[in-house]
Image (tube, rainbow, N blue to C red; front, top):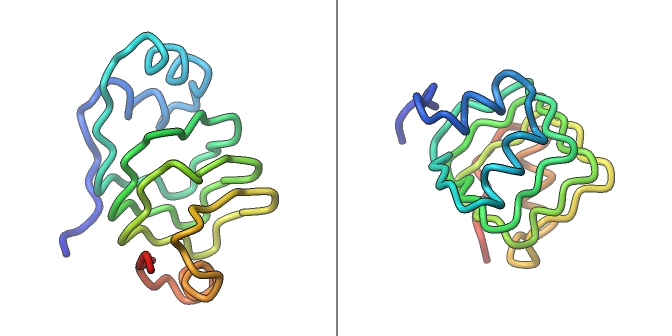
Length: 112
């Protein structure tokens, strides 16, 4: 497993600068975004349209994920230690224990 990366992808940079609505609009228009393994720690990602996002191996430490629907996102290997997750939907393939271990201890989530 490698360290989380700071991507040069323009859509990733929108997330880093808090421009969630523009990120959502550009994705809806068909622009591709590779977030696999990216550093998303501490970002406010509320309002993110996450359907179909590949968030595998992402580092989401202390990110604000409140209210996000991640049911159709790929989260294998992601870590959410200290993230704010109130109202967040997670994929059914993730056991509650996996989510809790990642939230409290930073373990990488594994799908069942």
